[in-house]
Structure formats: C-alpha cells, structure tokens
Image 1 (cartoon, helix red, strand yellow):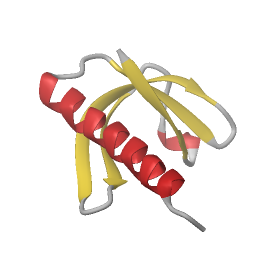
Image 2 (cartoon, one colour):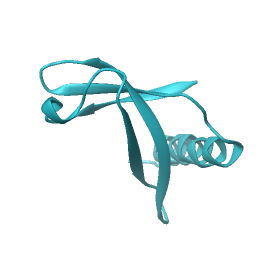
Image 3 (cartoon, one colour):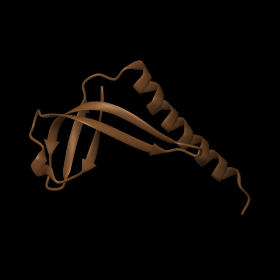
Length: 82
C-alpha cells in the first residue's frame, strides 16, 4: 500500500472519495506517466492525501524505475569534479 500528498483545491474532494490519478515523472531520458486509483484519506486547507488501495506489479515497476533514476542521477552528480 502506498499513497501521495498533492497540493490542490480541496473542495473537489470528499473523504473516502475515489479519483483516477495520473502521476508524471521526469526522468533523465523520458517522462513516465503512471496511472493509479486513489482514495482520499485526509484533506487539509490546500492538500489532499490519497491512499493507493492496490498497486499492480506494473505500477510498482514504474515507481521503482523513478526511484532508481533519481538515485542514479544523485550518484552521477556526486562523482563530478567541480
């Protein structure tokens, strides 16, 4: 189980409401789009927290690629001589 916290106009969302989310991540060589259903579990003044009830193997793979790319970018940056 996972989730995401987004900044949004919260009037459009109700607690326990469901939404189709499309998360976009800019990697070094491409932009990855990850569709995911989410359930509203918390609302603030300008934030909405979604819980992902089910993450498929394919979605998990996409998210792991995002993490791996970020770690690789940090490593490359740390190895550069200023």
